[in-house]
Length: 496
Ligand code: FRU
Image (cartoon, rainbow, N blue to C red; front, side, top):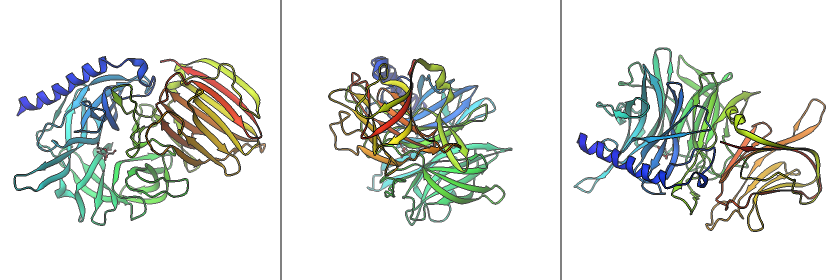
């Protein structure tokens, strides 16, 4: 058996090594983590281990579509430059043969401890389908990991009454005092999502403590990939619900990721929900996870793709990328997200314009590119629509359009070169912020990285992320308005 286990992981590692060597650096994002080879989904095990940030991910290196899940692995010192490491885990045990699903990691006494979901998915001789999800542990040195002999560490026997053994996944661990806690996603008998809280002092025997929160028919069905952390004077439960219905501009159909703001009483394990809001309002964002840095920042990374759209490039053997890690800050009761400040070190070739009047299609000298950090501040609003065309050529364009009457921002990838009938447009609420002198400004910061854009509104008050696979020669940027806008523009190239 031990022989078999090694060979499955070794085989996957060989496939990966060969695949990565065949992909040119220019055919993947420059400063966003992308799949080494084949398919990638959720970020996993985002953690600080021996002074480096490790990130694992759901991974199927054998093809560009989802398949039996491995844990891919990489690390970084600054969240911008990532080093690929060999695959950490393959689904090679009886309790995880159906996949090593999402989970988390923590450093304990010099060891790197991984908690993940093991899936059993097989048909028995009598024709029954044997399917369940359990929580498992592996330990390693930052490079090689061994699964714990006593796995699983949490199985269906510990579930609260009416908890599902089939939908029980994605443990996120943290330490508090002498104990370790984890939250894990689950579904109850009504089909509602819920988050369960567990505790241990030895990592091996876990005790179920409480149901922290549940969807109660309102926020989708199964709650995937929970995370739970203090931010400012609140606790935030972050979950990714499946099967949601669209609601205004706040939520869209299908898989969403939400911040549940609340208060948490540690002695009674009660979480009191205050409000729920989307994490990202774009087309491609799911399953975010956070890590706390050595200097105390709360940094979040998400998978920049959508389960329903699953658009991918047709020119290269990788599929899937992550957002740039973002710092979360609670400001006047609202979470702001900003690109990690480490990115600023890679900004070069600054080009700046102040007080530019835009009343027709306007290109500005030097403002172009696909690997850039672009800030556009609108300071005069004598228009209905203001539009930024980017990844632009005669044939292609991505659109970001601000509607000043309706106070909303639309991202549109209809003409980005897609040949599939997927969702191409999404809107979010967007209002200018007002300074002490009553001056209105709407700030848009666009991070472009070849095949993706992340748009930060008003210093990260709301964010929208989207991917597109427009040919790289479409690198123009054009501003337009149907009236008169006044803008300030700052552009940097990102040189990694
Ligand atoms: C979320 C998810 C997780 C699961 C993983 C499987 O995208 O469905 O709940 O662990 O992906 O790859």
